[in-house]
Image (cartoon, rainbow, N blue to C red; front, side, top):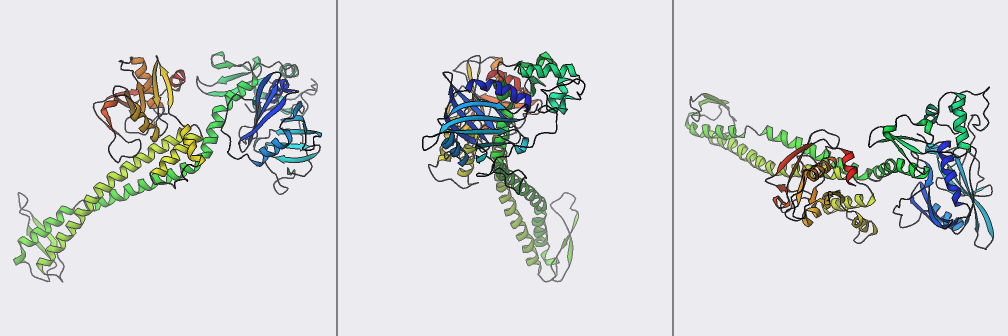
Length: 546
């Protein structure tokens, strides 16, 4: 469901508790969102305003995000003009996707001034704007005249977005009623579930006026939230419905994984490109090495020709183009035809074949080493890509970047930089099953750390022959149950490249059977005396352990 006028109405109704509240703190954790901390009615509240192109929204938030070390300019402007101010009113313009937060605050001279913080929810055109009277003070997105006929720039007059060419849903007339989507603030998704009849739409709009909302999320399956709604009449299947006592909690729950996933994907784009290019290079190198190996596969024949020329040296004359001699190395001694260089004598011809053989033999020996190194590097890089895929936050990405720097794939950042310090906040995932702790590494450095801290009788698990997380079950010296082992096997399969596959093979053994070879890359190990389990990854079982 789109965050339409109905959704905004439900949220704005909840935000009324903030009236007369004092603004304590303002942060801008992302380039397109602001969080305002407000003290109201004896309690602390935090409000998120987002103009993200994909998920613009407004609601109370209970989540904390890491803030940039240096506040963005828009955040500084908000702090200057609004911090310490008092919320006067929070108003939605009709059922439009526009909210005005009116604030009274003292300026630098101590005079009381009125400011308005505006959230415009318009897809990729969404914006957060601070105005003073009719003029723009600043906006999170600057829109020039060349970009739009409605510029939004500091110092320019604020012009409201053009109103939609739709009917006012609060002035319903059965005689002129058409369809719900023809009314302001009603998205297509809402219109489809409200129903086509006037009576259905009238009842919904009556509920909106009375703020009679019943927030819920509809799940297409047990784990996948598909859409959300605000009225009981929208519910179309009780088995996959989760109700909420707050519209804000419902909206935050619905968008949490979607928004976070998108942002991490954006922030990891450079790492994905880098590692993707390195993988492509390693694959190309492997192909070239394989072709070279095939080209020199007949090198033993070169040595044979040299030996046969030497054995028949007195029967060969300089100037011969070729000779036909018996191959006495084979049982039936078949005749073999050997080309000769007419400019060389028989001994020199023999040396030509011996030298070619020796060169190709050295090439083959070098290729054996190079192909093994390249195979190890490819395996490592695919494991790194898997780590990027399952990164959950900036700290995870920082740790992966630091690992790549240590391996020489990217430049190292200055020692002790703030970005380096972030990586220390990234820790392995932790789950519990029947009181036993199960740890899951999110990248190769964490995988190595798990190996280091695990006791010899703890259980180590990893998917067979595909990139994935190392998993450790802290057994406390006990023999764990089949249920806990199955939980760990599922985690190993779920946090691997086989996440979307069926019947994924997972190897497991005591930690003491796992070794890390000297000079091996992060996350690379060898193991022996193990068992293999097969499982189809189940996200539901993963969530049960959280």
